[in-house]
Length: 435
Image (cartoon, rainbow, N blue to C red; front, side, top):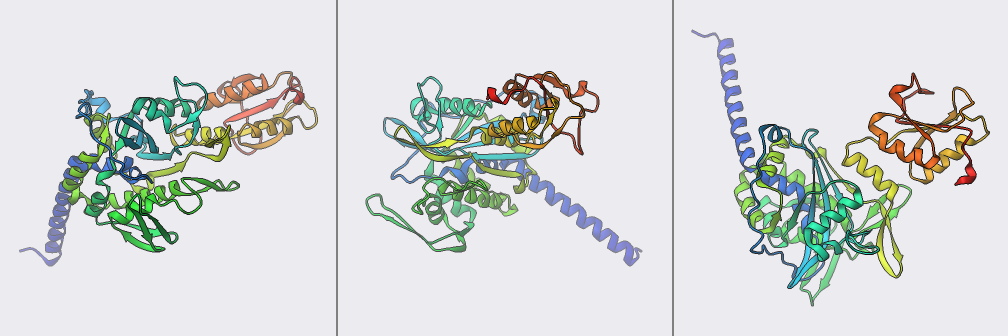
């Protein structure tokens, strides 16, 4: 006969087995339905942003199911990082439509990291095959998703091979199936467009928005800020519709990550089938989804393309800050920490390091330390760089017409209390007048 202690131990073991069984069953449901959750993470929260009447996305006869991608076991087990362009299209009859919303979803399965970068539709860029500058949202109108991906790829300097195009029709039902999304509405949102049959009537405060109210929240832009505005240049803070879209996206991701959402996957699947079109192969989507099955909502980072609104040749643009954009892409897409730079005076000329540091800061490079080198007498300026930041070191070496040196080939090059990715040792050939 078992003692009370043994009975309790048996009870705990049985409860543990039941818990593990329930967990396995829950994970099996995730394995079958995680692609739907991934689709939500990629774009459902960002897709239904429009201020135009009657937007409809239809699946044409050539837009059937995506082909099945053949992958080997190694690739399936360890999918590569991937960049996916999420498109919300203002599509009209006989017109492929300009993108009302563009978001780059950069997914690193190994690090379980997702970055969602909002690209303002009026961003001033060069579109491949076109002359001069244009608004980014025109790329889809000129050449569909393929040209839109090419434009973003060239602009950001990263590969973009896949897209997700969103149909607005299923949005309200999708949110209602989820049971609504909790949002802290920032202000009174009141707008009526009787001609367009658009009526927005939201009060401030924390509340659960149903499908209709959620759509109204992400469509509202009558606050004087439009789609996006730089409201605090010193802090790099933005306002406007894109910022609210990101806030909604965060809330939607938290909602989608809840265990209760799993039981709603069949209904979600039906909704997504009707409103999502993509060239992302099913097998790749599943592999990505499986690799992200333990993704925490805190691992999803949102950002806005840094820049400012301006009028160029009579056209209103969102003019990107190229240096800040490069830093953002390095950090969020390439997974590189912001580069650290030290400038040392190796020439002995008074103020040489300070003037060189000022030049780098003007180019957007973050100089963290300026001081004298351990010795003077450097004839030529040298740029000592770590192997993983060689691209940055090359850019800086070109600025100063300097010699670039691999830090691993230099014995103890650091000067000060820390190591730096790039050290610029200003030599006697440095002349501030050349700039």
